[in-house]
Image 1: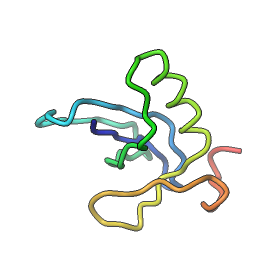
Image 2: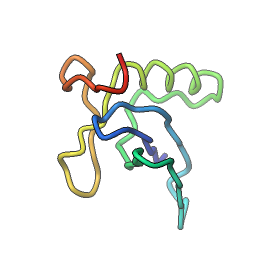
Image 3: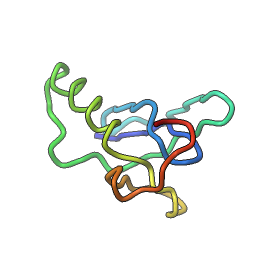
Image 4: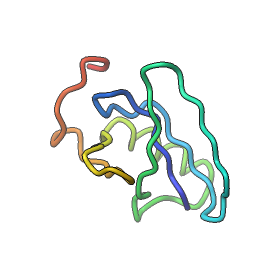
Length: 88
């Protein structure tokens, strides 16, 4: 599964998009000031849609995008990331 995080410059995740591994030519358009980054999906990602929705909500609240890596970012627990000026 591929996973993309829509985030602000501080790494706060505002939306998560998932898709199958074989998705080709994916284009995402974000509003000004937001970015999208492909991230490694967590190992415990649920297979069912209802479980996935709940998991993604918890994931977004507890992780930020660490965009220090140039091609594929990693996410870090909120307690390990600097605070974002855009979200409390």
